[in-house]
Length: 219
Image (cartoon, rainbow, N blue to C red; front, side):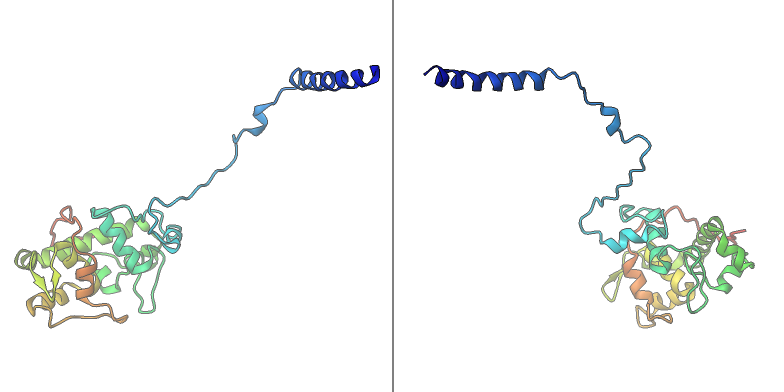
């Protein structure tokens, strides 16, 4: 009987002793060992579920490209560059067009650039070339911009940015022919890309910062 009572008493005492030991331990956790200081943390999370992985990956070729630039002028430049070359300053295509914006050699000469290797190695010069060419095209097409912006041709709304993008693709002369023929004369390049396609794809961007300049030069 005494043994039975002792066994009932011993079990609660053992449990109490173990709890006391576990809570009274002098050992403390050193939180500093879990610090992230000095570690390289690189998180890439899209803010838009509709942006595909290949679009995010393309940012490696051109860090300035962003799908969130909207209809700003920077958005216009980067969207056009992305279509032309994937935003690659060093790109040279099978037809010999060069750089981020895929300039032809003759166009570069008109805006003062003759050293093609220097052009390919100089992103700043390529950006200046884009601005100079856009300003020159806007001057050449100033009357067409005034007469056609806001109208529809083959269902496509004509905008200033669409006109400038198409002029970058095909030259201002081809854009004049397209507009003045009301879409009948629709130039296409070696890859089958048409003036009308660029008019539609690059419609509605803010290109008001581009000032018409007949004598615009990059250098």
